[in-house]
Image (cartoon, rainbow, N blue to C red):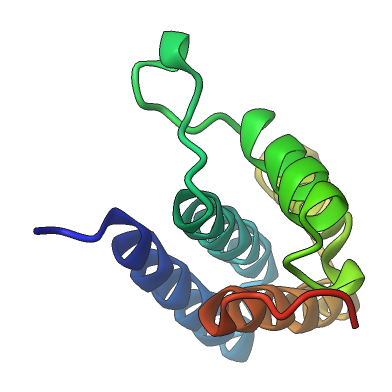
Length: 134
């Protein structure tokens, strides 16, 4: 049987590898995009492992509002399954991705270097299965 959480974690790892590659090639807008999706996909994996599914009315779709709200509210806040350093990572990478994809300015190397560092920590924490408060 297919383990959907593992599938999303694999997607997160591939997105992170894509972010690393795009950064190495100085394509910073693409790096920002891949950083966000690495975190988003890892958060879905974490939610699935915790038994949390998308809302019934969402037809099995994970929204960009639901995932961060449930990850931070339930897994960080209530259950304390992940380190507090992950708080706001989804929001910050989402805002950077949105700027990269839709705004009329370029994302800087400094911005993506920080996003990459946060994204690595996020994906690694989900790979390890959390670990509680640090």
